[in-house]
Structures are given as C-alpha cells and as structure tokens.
Length: 333
Image (cartoon, helix red, strand yellow):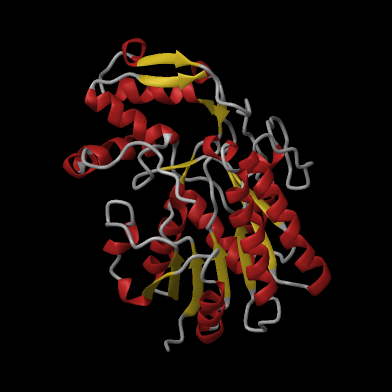
C-alpha cells in the first residue's frame, strides 16, 4: 500500500462525491476507495474517470442499507485517515411519498455505520455531508448554530441524521465534522437538476417549467469550489464543528434560467411557463460561510456566469450522448 493519504469516499457516484474524488486525485497526494450502491457511471457523469492519477482510485459497489458488514470490513482493512460521506436519499418531492426510505438511509444507515466506526483509532476525521435544508427557509445571517426547522421529509431525515451523529461525538469523541453547502451545480450534474435540465429543454425547443414562477432564491455555487472547501475541512476542520460553504449572495431560479436563455440566444418569455410551487419549497436558501472563510482562507472562485457557461459547453460538447439519457429523476428505494 502506498504512503499516500488514505481516504474513503462514500457516495462516490454522486455528483458531489465524484467531483471531490477528481479534485483529490488531481493533487497526486491521496489513495482513495470509493463506495456507492450503483455501478460506476460513464465519464459523462464521473469526471475522475479522465484523471491522470486514476490508478490511485479503487471502486467498490456496496449499499449502506444492505452491505454494512462488508463496508466496515473494507474500512478496517484499508485503514483510511479520512472518510467523507456523500451518500443520501436526496430528492425532496418523492420524499413525501415514501418518507421511511429517506429515514432509513439518512438516519438509520449512517447511525449504524458510525456506531461501527467509533472505535477505529486510525480515523482522524469523518466528514458528514449535510444540507442547509435542515434550517428550512432561511435568509440573512444564518450561522452554523441556527435552529433546525426542516420543511420536508427529506430535510427532516437529514436533520435527524445530523443530530444522531452528533451524539457519537458528544459521548465517544468520534472525530466528526459536518458540511452544509448550498445549491451546487456544474458540468457532470444529474440531468434532472434545474440548470442542466433548462439547457437541455432550450436545445430541444421545449418550455421550462418554473415552479412558483422561479421566485425561490438559491445560493448557487460551483461544485469545484465546494470540493475545495470540503478538502480543507477534511484536513483541517475542528472536530465537532459544522461548516457552511456558500456564496455571498443568492439569486432567483428565474434569473438563472433567464441567463441561460440569453446566453443561448433564446427569448426567456417564449421558453418558460409558470407552474405551481413545490410542496414544502423553502423560499430562500442563504447561509453564512464566514467560519470556513476565516479558518481555511476559503472562498468561491468560479463566478456564476462562468460556471453556467461551462455547463452549456459541457452539454453542447456531449449532446449526442446526453440526448439519449433519461431527463427525469428515477427513484431507487
């Protein structure tokens, strides 16, 4: 085994997990094992598959809800210094139909995992990827100690999972840090998400549905900026702390879609239509990231305009492949 820093990334097939792996591999300093419940996707969605240091990555297909024994055994043998867990049931709308599935993964499975890991002395930091949706609708100066006030079953399951994991830090000194980042986007994202879906609809000449007219304010931040912050939290974060990663200001979904239409030479009014708001939709997601900025000298580097333009280019450059992909979310229990 190499003398590189050993990291396990759970949820390695996710948009955020795969970009994080790509960032770590790019440095040449890490030996990484990725775990995900599904088979590896193509390089269209997994940027690390083109990384020059791919030989430092190993993938294992394992499910937190079904293969806990194998996951814990793998970690015991690999002996990583760091574990970063991106795995979650993450979509809001379907969580209303089967909330027990969200609680199974986002609370019970991760609690069982940490219970099994708490006595491993080689582990320096377990980074849990949470969500600002645990706060409910938030604006102004929302800090890491804000009251949890979830508005959906998905958000409630994430809040419950966060609280459960914190008991292991409080009672056993488990080396836990948490990350709550705002609305990530970028190339390689799932096609049902609002930004890639909007670009695809425009290219196909189809209208974009704006829930509530697109008035909800999101804090969009490029995935690579988030990955950089997560690496710093993994390596330098204070155990027991929660860190926010966010831009300074939010922007409405409406304005994001308008930018995409303008950049692609289409009229916003012709390519959009207003539909009803989503159940439990929070009106604003704006959180304060002063702590991460002050402790790690971290800040977003990729402007929204630059990032959105790169998404357009990614879709146009891979259009033949993307046009064959499903464009709607497919729920897997």
